[in-house]
Image 1 (cartoon, protein in one colour):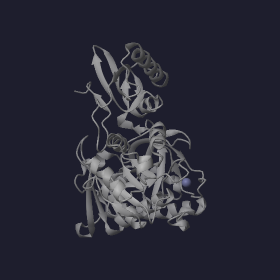
Image 2: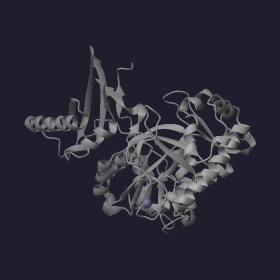
Image 3: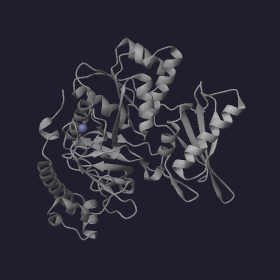
Image 4: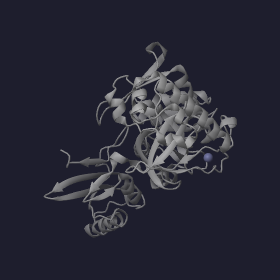
Length: 433
Ligand SMILES: [Zn+2]
């Protein structure tokens, strides 16, 4: 199937904008009338729902931040009565108070519909066996993909994370054709499969992977695709706006964000002003359909680039490019901004470097020190000191070329760096401790 919902997905841009305007107006009136939080916020900003006369007028509304969800914990922003809610998801709260998202039956329906469109656009559907190797539970990844894959008629294999050898056996025994997990967990699956003597390319039917919940580079995509022969698609979403929602289509040139469900803006994180298409900025989402927990101009903290031109696949909805990282993942080393994803891009282009790496940041006296620990491949790991010195120099030089800052490079044996089952922890910043 080419499109899950062609009427919406291929809607002329002018019609899509008209629809967005209508939905935005309805949303603004609703929250102004029925939510004390929004009413107060809008009054303080000198805003009245009558001020929305075009789609662009959205910029007159104040931004929302994760702090707003935390300050109103657990349910200050939830606009539905508890008996209307059919589910809660709760964020892990590793970086502060957790956030709670409530869903009505219709919210779950739309979330699932968004993923049904997305998975179909990536060529997944009836007849596929989809292994969902995201965590099931309070985290949105597992259940989100589970219902999305069921909706399109795929057969779901709900393995969740962990027990990797068994995952690989089941993949072979039940003929898994598509998998969803974090890219770092898939790299781990690849490694374990190799140890078991299983070639994903030749001994399984796997042909597609849907990878996300952490930033990953185009270079990592190339590695995965070359090693396994599968197509590796990017998936995006966060719990605050439902969970995983959008993927790349088969063209693999950006992630379609469904305009009838979300209004997406890209802003300069410093000034809050809109940036042009093609320029990097922070993603801001307004939910046009969510009932229990609507969000208006929610600053998600992820950095990306938007392309509003219709895609080669025929879909008219805007696309966002690979997530560069979160504004709060950015490291400032001796005054220079460094994103872990930039380090990944450099490393994954060097054939002797393995798939696992980490960044350690420390402060020696007044100076920030960044060390990049890099695991070598079996082939890259040489007993000859001279070879290793040469490689170390090469890695340092290429990192400096991209980051504009010198980093200490530490080459380590294959298998040294801890593997992750969920989101990989790539950075240890000892300056904060
Ligand atoms: Zn497309």
